[in-house]
Figure (cartoon, rainbow, N blue to C red):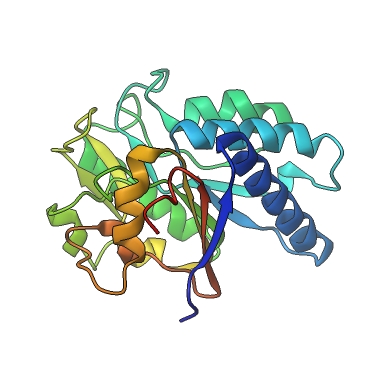
Length: 240
């Protein structure tokens, strides 16, 4: 396992531009080599900025988004049209603008009777249409150190026999979510953590500390098979 790489940008805007530029280059290289890359998106404020930059940079890129397979590391189990859906924001800012067609959303409350069924369906879809690993998995980190919808002290942290799990008592609203498990998240060639803001500085420091417990800081539990990169702005990196 390689040591994580830490890249610090002056602010959130520069961070978004750096991440978007790196991802466009990776996707272009994969397609130039004849591959159909698979990526997993995340939600949150910095993700929104990254999506906007990706759409802008894609205008001049040698990149065919119809040949990119898109997933999410987690999703809120709410109505399909809810603003709480990570997928809704990603579609508006990026996916619909660039012509992405191989987009696999987590089932919503319109599609599944309960959150457990949604997790089961999403896992089956990943097994059917996934490639066995993500080329790039992007993740945010909460101020409490949570990653995807795997929260400190939550029973979902210990699930090792499933691809996805239904979360029914999230400490952060909305309470019901679907999350990939550590077992699925760690099947990634590259894991990119995207973290912005002073509120995240303690969590970043805990995740990157030499010692620590994944049950206290779940972000410690995800690493890429080939690389793990922490894209931070100065505020998020302040405790390193």
